[in-house]
Length: 352
Image 1 (cartoon, rainbow, N blue to C red):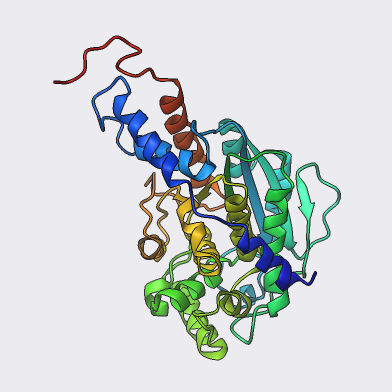
Image 2: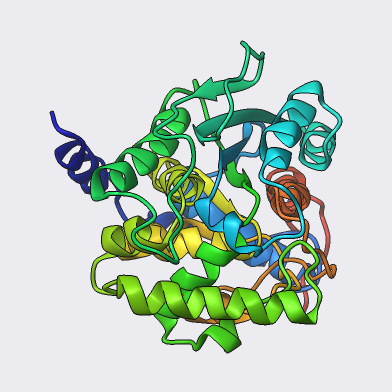
């Protein structure tokens, strides 16, 4: 089966959550031994997880963090203060267990898979690395399309495949590593939300004012040259996206196929969520916004998706770091729902 047909078959398998279980979960929540509504959004999150997982008791034990990696030709335009070599250096650091996403994922009990879909480096065999390299980075999107349409599809399928390869998945998140990748993410936000480059361009990994202006000009040029079609998410991904952004969208699709709670990280993850939801609207019901990053257009993307983030810690690292922390919040939602007794079980007189 050709890649486009395979993707189409995957999309057909994504079904809406079980609304009957959502209603049943809300009923159980109503009778737990506490003032009703006193656990706030933990209550609604538990019910949502029960619904998307198609389970009377939401699960949290099997957590998966897929860190998708790819390089970007647009770095030659000076859109990042870091050299593109930092991409592969950080992947090696993650595999060693010393990077932020490795440390945070370990702390919440999440399995980490490092997915190389487009790094300009030949990795040795690494314990946590899965290689599905499509190319050695994208082309410079300010001069033409970042990749071809087949490459966009293959990047999505790579993310799907990693999730489907797991024995069991209850909660899944996609992180990323790719120097320069807030530039394609801003392009994606502009394409789908109609934002101007000025509205969408942030400081990325720490740009000064002059470099932000340069980045804004690069994004404007990329949009003018490529003219991505917002009605065609594969066209947007191919023209102004990145291989790791496509893979993140694939992780979201795979998570929905496996009926897992899908946690979005920051701005780059939210850009990938725009791609995923345009490909399959049913995916939106599975998405949980982990946190609100400081990147300029993140709030606008979350608003378009209709998602309220669980956390707002002033973070802007990326890698999946905010999603990893949010996994613990999701775990708390599950354990309170599963392990608390009801008013009747606890022999507590109900409110009159």
